[in-house]
Length: 401
Image 1 (cartoon, rainbow, N blue to C red):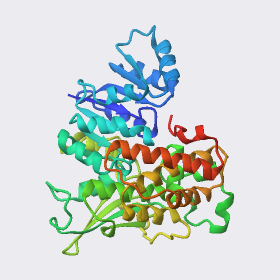
Image 2: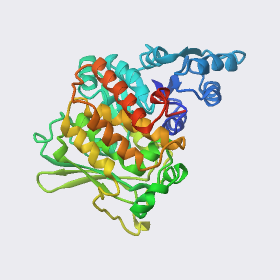
Image 3: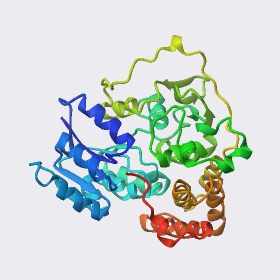
């Protein structure tokens, strides 16, 4: 019986993870549930799964959760704030941690889980985009097992040879190919993008996701962050990581080998598949996802991303090439700009322009420690707020429920 701490329990990945877990009560139990501030949903989940621990990042929300479940006779202890999330991630009762808190708020608990040597199912991009080398060293030193559950990175993981050691050349790998749907604006006139609304940007054609990651998909910043993440997870240089637009979202990623072979992982666009694969690895379990009927697919098409339409993708490659804290700065500026766009405070094109200007304004700096990375993150948020003419308190707007 594996006991799972779920960071990001009230988000879309949390929904999918709990659906898979509930299908296998003989294999999995919930040790901890953690989220940003969604009291009502977390209370309902506590009543259903009866975890020993629940944690909310927002202090007022944590107090409200305590009051909400006080008379329910649950075994659940409520924790609050960043320290509460870290405690949930490192609970001695959990051997498995699923890290799916969106944004920089997920960095510290994910890093703590790696240091504690957990079996770590990672969906939080920021742990790698911000933490990078710090995170990978922590996982190595702590003896953690890293299992990616982003659909693209999980697909690559499934296509790698057994015992892969983060060295593509030694494994005969020529390149990693991440696929992207192209989002809701793949065929929208570029001139019209200045007027798109948050609801339009969040209307993903294939995937059901939270609003922040949906906007990142529309701009393809999400794919740019995945390139950075793939660099750290798989040890591949940027020159060996490509992106292809694949509108059908059936082929989730590919690995090309030196002998000309290309291995791909296919499946429905449903997060329960990669979550089930990682939860059970190296075994396989039923996920609740229907069979893929290849005969019914009219075609599978691929195209090269247009960097005029998707300038954020190029920005991510540039930040990875720049090294140091550039990827930290990019991520922080993007979080601020996306929050401003979703709140109606900034137009859609300002997401890219804010990120680009923040990168140009801030001097190159190192991010070899967590403290350095967090300092760069804070500085970038202040700069992005200034560029967007936002109040300083907008720099830390949480981006998930």
